[in-house]
Image 1 (cartoon, rainbow, N blue to C red):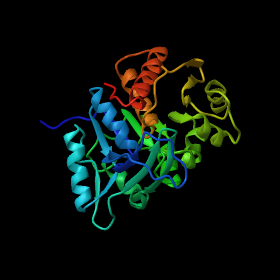
Image 2: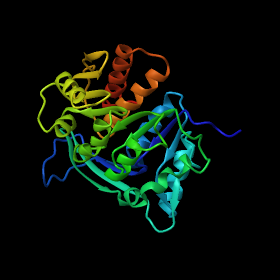
Image 3: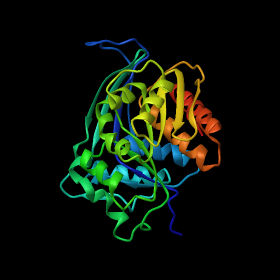
Image 4: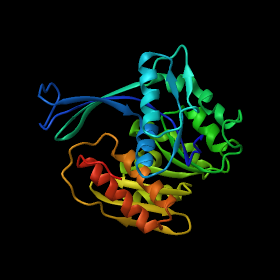
Length: 295
């Protein structure tokens, strides 16, 4: 029987190549550690966490028709995701991301992820070709690895006008791509304090201050994290609430924000109120950065 999607995950799906060491690292460090290759990308990380929480995600992304792409498609399907919504390109390679992490956090990362941007609006074809219900009115997790033009089209166009959009910038360098969602008061934004500062063209010491400022700039709803310090959630009608994450020994950081976002979406899908959803998301992110797998 064909599976029905509980949520669409739109954005980056690629191979993550991560080198991790228990040592403190700096520029030029040469230390022992472990190197892994796993399915990754913001949309993929969110989808994998959602699947662990019992939801069925459909992926809207670009994957090459190469050996790495075939492996990645198989890995997505094996993890319970709907893959017939994925755009397969004959001339674009499968994207990759490489990061190095030490005991002192992320040292450096390179995203070889040009194919998603090059594919552009082709990844949205399932929203208009009958593959998915139109107009789509369900949950959508969207990441900022898409081009600014495509994000603006999503924020203002008809295809997802009735959807419950949940949007993350992917990285501080892409935070300002979320501007169309501020100016059009669309979606729930998931950002950290640095990303909030870039969107507001200032700096913030606390997540509640950042959340309040984003709401003042037009955001419909926001969630702001600040590492191990308190996080905040706010909307125009209910004001800003905050909670402090559990304190854990941090062993990894890549994917922590994606885990927080997915856990929050899953908690609300199960009917949790805003306080419980924020607490559950913080707990899941803490479990993840400690090296365990939230479920």
